[in-house]
Image (tube, rainbow over all chains, first blue to last red; front, side, top):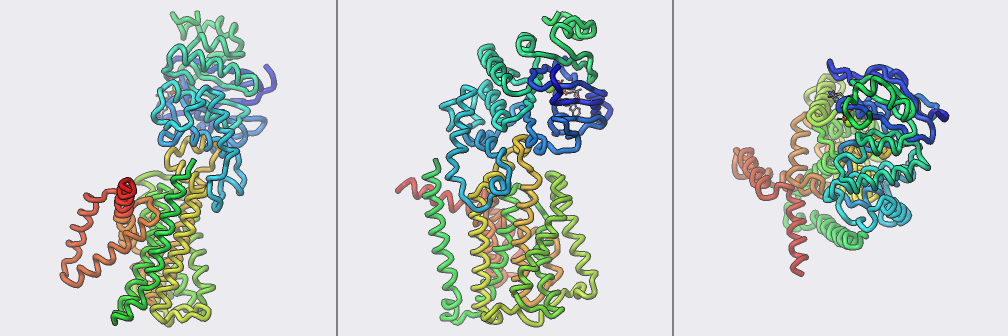
Length: 253
Length: 323
Ligand SMILES: Nc1ncnc2c1ncn2[C@@H]1O[C@H](COP(=O)(O)OP(=O)(O)OP(=O)(O)O)[C@@H](O)[C@H]1O
Ligand SMILES: [Mg+2]
């Protein structure tokens, strides 16, 4: 593994009596595509919440680019170069695609002269708009700029979900089931997109589609019942007895 | 991209300027008809218009349903009265002080309250406001239940605020200035960001926006304007009364916002005008004016559920279509 960009160190999270995560530790190397897999309810989304800052762990640390970010709110982590997508599409439904992405681009300019800019009307921000158009074209949503996000087809919504995270120009991209509920063609397009992105960003990918996972992942971590079962190369993971037990009868065998 | 909207808002600004010009003519007109008494009443309406506008910025534009706006309104009033007691009569000092006190108060209250949502936010802002109310009536030096009266109105450069018409014009100028400021803010980036936060808070946080900071700033701006309204109301009645701090005051302002139009720039002002006018007229005819007012409110809720400002806007839009 290359030098770690993200280190998850003994992270636990409980909801009332339910233990969603139990002392999970692994690292994501800079430049790799790291897949996070596990059965339904294994705690994958919960882990993404702890990493991204949407929730705080009960115990353990999240170290990003050499800095302990455990106490930082989500926006501060985004500003440090960590962006996420949501398993359940979480976009601005009542805004156009262009306005959605413009917000993401604008979020990067966070000096007091911009985000908190009180005075100047917003009409003259052509550079922002041009960049946002570029992002939409990049994921194959070019020409749909004026469409309302809420009226997109499901597959397109998933693409928008990813492009919003992407337009923050992260070092680390956390993707929570980007292909959830999409058809084979759309899945294929998403896999191609992630392959392309992987050349520039580190990606932690939660995904159920094992074909996609084994095509994309340099390394994998497996969660079962909130516990990390194993972490390693695709071959190591495939051969691991506990993984085989958890996935009994599935295509991973 | 927004050419049409831009033309529309230019037209709206012209309309607003026209309304303000007419309002500025009100004192001489009333004098001509021998109705000077109503100049003071009109100033009171404008002060409440400002207070309701400031609340509408927080509730309608910031999406934070706060139920403690009286705290900031009252704080502005008490600041002016307390300063007057200690010999500071100049508006140039006392009014900015009222704004600052309200803003600082909002910074503290907002910092704690904004971590909660929905009903909890309503309750905690109410609780803070009530704390300040009880603090005020327990302070002997602030006049307790009676409040603190002002011997004179603030001094305002060469202007004589004791003159009702002058006071009215100064109040009108304050309201106009605040409305211009809010119009500008809502059309600038800060305003767009706030709107997007209202639409989807978690995604905005996920795009790197410090959501809490934005909401807090919105809360403080609204409170600061309420502080100015408080400074004006203390001068108007020459009294900083505990009633200004009471929860019923927060309720009244909220009703004005709802009647006028939540989230519409002029919603608060329209609501204040309608509510106070109706109250004034009804009180003339019947001692049961509260009940009549309730009926009128019901009518508004059913005929113009988005508030009168939105309803008027709709009428204009329809008229434009026919053009
Ligand atoms: N906010 C919450 N309150 C209570 N329990 C929760 C909460 N969030 C998650 N859980 C529980 O924690 C466990 C892990 O849930 P999580 O959503 O992280 O699983 P997952 O691996 O993402 O599953 P899936 O593959 O279905 O998306 C589940 O038992 C879930 O019910
Ligand atoms: Mg999940």
